[in-house]
Image (cartoon, rainbow over all chains, first blue to last red):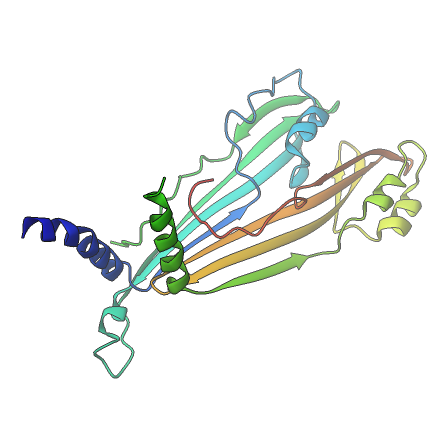
Length: 141
Length: 130
């Protein structure tokens, strides 16, 4: 009997897992490659030029002018979306389609901004805001 | 080793049974930036008019450091979806190609900056990890 239970255990676990993830969607959207502090560690304010940065990171998404100098901006985005429709549980028994959906979207946006002087030398660099590191978590409450 | 073969086979059969379908989608914004046209632009010799005839009007015109900057861009989005019976996975990857042509006050090209991030961008399905 115990041996039978041990054999059935993985099957039961798999069934429970399947039932709980019924009608599940997992979506991820990324815009450009997210940059980290390690990626920009080579930038030395006052020494590194914008050309050096472009050689390593590619062209920025935008270049604008400010009173303090030229601002080059690298933007990136990481969005995670997950959704579960518990209405699927009733599909075999109900004549109508019922939905009980929970979903959640996590949007992680950030940008690297470089301030350059008139000779295109980087004087300051900073991330606009740290990526919040969204997780796949459909629980919205 | 013999133990793994039936297990691998079972996983493949299970995956095939659960696989409803898959989808590939692609969206682009803007024209492809042709490398030949960019290569034809020479620093300190090519004029603004020649740039315009080679690449057309810029998507964005900026004034930076008392210089005119022509920006050309193109976006490419690739979507891969794996539709299983119980769960669907989708991954959307968006990247851009950007070209900046910096012109001096005389309208001569001072610098050309191009990066093609879309090169090598693949369709991805798995939303986890990197």
